[in-house]
Amino acid sequence: MDGFLNLHKPLTVTSHDCVARLRRLLKTKKIGHAGTLDPMADGVLPMAIGRATRLLQFLPQSKAYRAIVRFGVTTATDDLEGEILTQMACPEVTLEQIKALLPQFIGTIDQIPPAFSAIQIEGKRLYDLARAGVAVDVPMRTVEVSQIKVLAWRGGEFPEIDLDITCGGGTYIRAIARDLGAALGTGATLAGLTRTHSSGFDLTQSLTFEAIESAIERQSLVLTAVEQPLMHHPSILLNDEETWRWCNGQKIAPPDKELPIGQVCRARRFDPGTQQDIFLGIAEVEAREDFVFLRAKMAYAECPCDRPLEDPLSSEPDHDSP
Image (tube, rainbow, N blue to C red):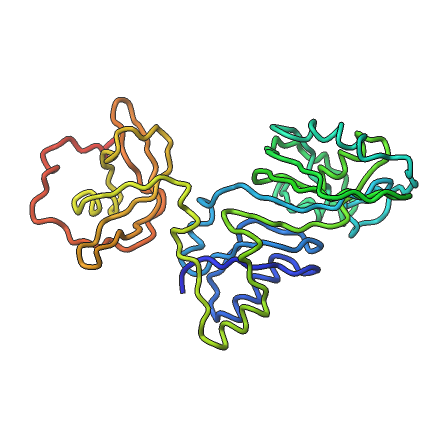
């Protein structure tokens, strides 16, 4: 069983718990997820099954969230799961004030991740250090936020705003909520979070555990094909000779001369038997001195062709040698 599964992670469970439960349901140990989702958050958690786990690093990085930010409250975890640090009613806050601040959180921004996060410092998770009472200077990181849209506004003693946030990988929505409250002068914390899009998967097509269990019982569960979420990478078609050399770790000239250095591609080969292309794996265009070549970053499939009887490249210089 190889492929991806668009899981709708429920509230109150960890991403690790989801992996463990799915392993029991599918009766396989080789399962991984594309990006941790906090226990208090629900929504899209892409899961890779079998050999697809090797492709997780090549999925698109864009993510989108629906976030509820509550003003007048700050917590140790920057969400409602943590100890309340400050609480002061702020009924005077207006939607217009908040809208005026939102542009500073769009684009390439620097943010300090929450102290309670999975980031590692010297081999230890920040949340483990925070729970142990160890004071740590959390390193700032640069992230990309492409869009923030206001969905709803609720005034009152502790006003709340619903935001639609589209961002790149590594962005902490809790940090945006915290920093928005700091910019406003009232403090704020994240009161709710749903991931609506992640790594090419959308909430509208996500499956709950109940739906997955039902599909397994009916023997109708279908995984997303391994290549489908990788379509943002251009594809290259290799002939038999190129396929054999690529699958065996040899460098070959890129079939497409227009590909830039550093470009990641989907390597494919046309199968005359099925009249379809076979996905071979992930390649990258590299260069050494004046030689541009294609290197296998991750070979997904077994080599589908035998060694040709005649090697038309045997008389050329061995570019594999240093």
